[in-house]
Amino acid sequence: MKRLLGCTAIVCSAYWCYPPAASADVIYTLNATNDSTTSGTGPFAQVDIHFVNSTTATATFSRLGSFSFGEMGLDINASTFNITGLTFTLAPGSSTPTYTLVMGGKVGGIGNFALDEVANPSGFSAAVINASFTITDTSGTWADETQVLNNVVPEAAVHAFNATGGSFFASGGPTVCTDCVINPTGSAPEPASIMLLGMGLLGLGAMTRRR
Image (cartoon, rainbow, N blue to C red; front, side):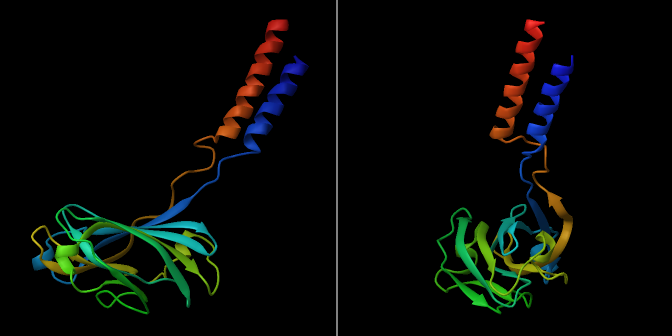
């Protein structure tokens, strides 16, 4: 019995000493509009800020409902930073836009960074339904996902379009959830942890058969 308890302790410690890493996001909902007659009722889009490490985060803009968008803006909590790896998905029937990075730029008067569309095509004819890019802080560090953007609502904005092409500016803050744990520690064992646990259970089974 003592040998069984010893093996059980080894199995448990092997599993819990190698827990899967957690990752956390903040979801910003863009539900404010500068033109409710054109926009109708929101929310219109959301922004997922994913904390990678103390100097790196990813931003993913996604439309909500039948809306689409073109230009994007964020109020990034850093005096200097880099933006890399822009990818996006076109709205149905849209032409491919060309984006330019504008440090200190605003969208609808919001933010300190903007992704502006270069003319021809631009606007509704070159709308997207989601876009993602990486933010690298080159002036300091962030403690967690809640520090990537400045905590002054609104922190994100898009130049949005309704289903027929009417344009307006949508903005907002972290109104869905803050400090959302996407993969909490211990919820999804990594392959290495599963292997260690499996090996321990096999050993327990073999000892039981011997007795």
